[in-house]
Length: 127
Image (cartoon, rainbow, N blue to C red):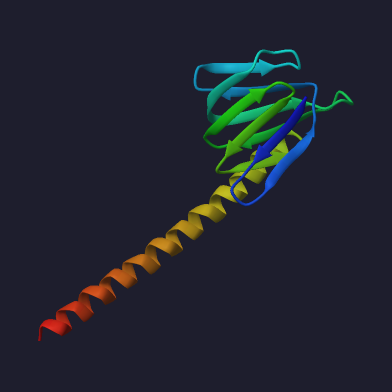
């Protein structure tokens, strides 16, 4: 099977795999090459896959969607972090989320300044 994990800014994974296990909205699902075609909504959690060399790899994914069609598994998510093992993956997720929190805080601050400036200028027009 071919696994493709697509993010808004990049294709994180595009490789052959033997098995994919993911947490869907209805529970964990394992997909093998001869699994029927399948579509599901993903819950935030882990996606695990086994490479043709029998190496298990992990990806932390945000909400998204999974589509299995014939020999291809497509996963689309807003955010995902790939890690070599679960310990390093946990640290990578923590680091990325703290960066996202900081960016969101900065964006909210900038928006608040813009709104305040807009209101101030609007009030000046009325004078």
